[in-house]
Image (tube, rainbow over all chains, first blue to last red):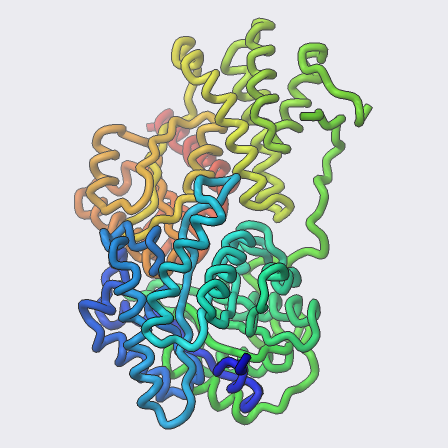
Length: 337
Length: 232
């Protein structure tokens, strides 16, 4: 089997720059709160290509399609669940065109976000239905020309596995990243060091795994330490938020500055990341600074949490604990079912 | 005794209540239903069953959720077990005119379908003795206004899980301000991408980082409201 384009580019360049924020950047282009960004693939494709082009001009090696909420479960809210294939196909085409027009290799990654539903037994969605939903979305993305499925902002291990299964079923290489936003783990309790195991019974395995979004640049670097410690040599992604969201007047502003995000990129390299990008709030000015940092930084000593806090700022959450602490309470006898 | 099966009906009242706390922690729905019936059969007032068994049990769950010992899957199972107990108690509570802490209208904002956290808050609030009106997902400002009008709550809760939907909270609060009703309600907001400063900036009374904090915050505001009402 031939090596996929993302793995090739990693082999060639070592560390790659992924892109910045899609959703929050579209606000700056006129998206209203509550509107579906994915519908802009049909109604305002020029603005989506513009944003992709700006990311490429800022130096990104990987651009993500505007398809984060592109499963039928998410599109249903906007009455577009009967156009899953078309919307995702269009999202991929728009990004593909921009990538093909670039003078260097730019990878088109098909963004796949969570369905927003709970899987059995907590919720009603079965594993097979979840695979189907992701497969439907990914078929559109594949037909539109993506290089790799980019499964992101995940919390549930089952949902990650379902998305990986869907990618494999249609022959797409894939990457998955989780959002570690709850006491250093995902909302569903996944510890960063366990990220590698989540697709262990899916073959072929992922091109890379990692973290995105979450709570802030310092926290995601702390998760990175756990992820890179758990498996030496793994290709790891960090795509952290550009600091913390704040309102300034009527506009949302993220607290991260270009120098801070450049330092985040350097620390990410030192902590073992292969693909570094930004999530919410990360704009081209930040990406340019990160590009320069990646191009000029020599991998240094592995940072400690103290170094990270010192250079990036305090952690918003406590780091993920060492064990899933057993209940501290004195337990009475457990009943048998 | 850990390997012996516990017969709930053989336990003393105190032991049974302890056992219910454990069973809530473990999310054992049928056991909670059974124990709720046993306490009622023994002549417990529905309100006592609610507060001493269910609310206290969920308080423990809430603390361990807050402290990163339990995560959403476990807490959902606990909340479902609590709901099963509440289902038995609710009609009885209504009959006996048991005291209510207050009323909350809660919903996920427009454009957002995420309701896991919002549902948890709703269940924990109900478990803590609040009346909860759940508007579900994808709520435009009109839904909040209509519910406020119809239900006259004490508290309005909004949830968002996406950075693209959280700014809508400001739209709702600004509309409440325009209508001159903002200060008649306590507005609480929550969701993964939010933070305290964000809550303040959109004009909410408080940001609640999880369901346990939401319950504590709601209780604190209700206490303050009562005190204000008394001194007014």
